[in-house]
Length: 271
Image (cartoon, rainbow, N blue to C red; front, side, top):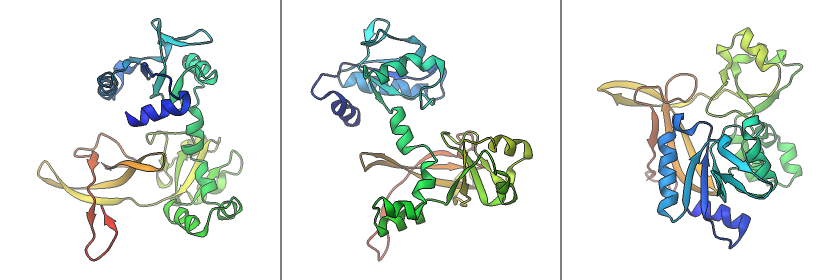
């Protein structure tokens, strides 16, 4: 709640926040519908009115964003149309551009922090040096971000020969959708990638953990995720999975808790 209230304060100052809309396409049929309901209850327990709505239910008169006649102050945006380009999101886009509603997260935030083409720039040491990034931070970025290149609309064929070294991801993708390990690529899929809108990232083998799943030992791949707001980590979690990409279908997989413990004889923290 502190995060949502801070987003509101940054945009509206001391104006009271009264009503929040949690917005996603056909929210009742979404896999995460129970989570939407938990957020609705969280907002209401904090004294706010809260709705879970489809973007088609919204109306904008040039001054106020409304749903069923009720004025919406803040939208908790769960849409995956990050730039709000799709026709059904036109009302929300118009209200956002008119600064008639506080939208979080918003298209500018996605462009700045989530577009995977940014990884190309963050791996360009000469550019980082030019904009004033110090050597220690440049080294940290180099060791923490796998080498990434944008796949051009023309000249993409060079990636085919070295495809086994790469993982291909859509620049504005999410949730591992339309991502491909190079060694699994077919010519048909590569032709789609070659049209542009993709980055190629150096393949990094995921770490693994051996767990007991229904009494049977299983090796599950692992990734760690930091949830961050304003430069501070709010939560660290893990995803356990089998296959090419993270998923919720692997038996025994899904989200896992991460506990920090001191490393023996060292000052740092091990997970």
